[in-house]
Image 1 (spheres, helix red, strand yellow):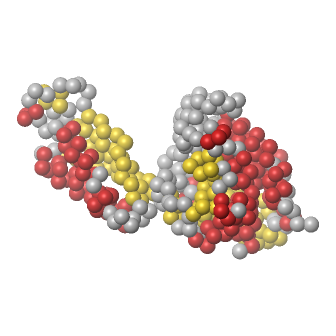
Image 2 (cartoon, helix red, strand yellow):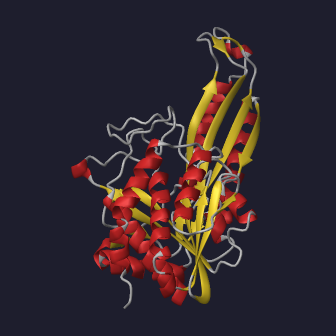
Image 3 (cartoon, one colour):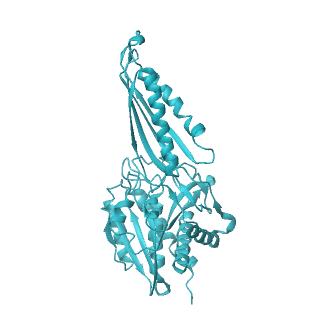
Length: 390
């Protein structure tokens, strides 16, 4: 008799929730997931698997089907954030200043649930499932490259991953058939002026005034220099200058982020930043340095694989609950895997205002409707099986 994925997932529902709560209580920062790694390995060994360490604190495990075939990799990130947990729940973080405020506890638990499901149906499998428990997604440059260097994608035909997503209601799934998440770049502009007494500004080159002009000018780039048909964001998060109210400082520092989906748009924006800084500083007698740090590539879903994943979502949730979303300007190092093999990333809704699950990602009160975990496990299991057969 054919094994029902739905029934197998239902059997593991309490296990997945228990694992999610365990990891919420014991979060670790990127590169420090030693206890997390030990727990994952212990759980996988109890299922009869032979996991191995990878990328320092990551884990790779394989479930081999009874018949040869393709290999599908499924990835979860396992690191927490440097945030004090403020949820009023018994599973609140026990590690001061560290919190799973982005849902990686749920990602890890879902992948363990998938390990249980596929371990229970090896006789039905044609092909192999590889489980990737990746560290350091929250720390640039991310843990995906280290996982790849450790052979995580060797022999893999397709890779899929999911992010539990608070903006979407529980019981829904978000997907795109192309661009999904942006490439996150950082920049720092250091303006060198000439300081002096606040009562004699004529003797100075005021870097605050120069910086203010640059701030205003930068805001025109995405509106005037980039086509409205392109997706791009330029935002500033830091403007630092001076320490005393009546002293004009020597320097000012601006730091910001550029989010794009193509190299051409990225290059255009940074050329505009350079041009604006050069002109404004030259007009004011100041000098500047511009330092850029490119982030991950954009997450761009393979359309064919995305259609297969969406079909899995339709089967689990119903067609009206699988939503083609607009690309998100957030970033994910899952994109490094997609640079190597065809892949698809999806969002699994966890929002539920009736249960008070409404705080955004990276908020100290971030939480999730745990019913989403079973949906996520079942969707990814269905998707993996479809991809093995494709």
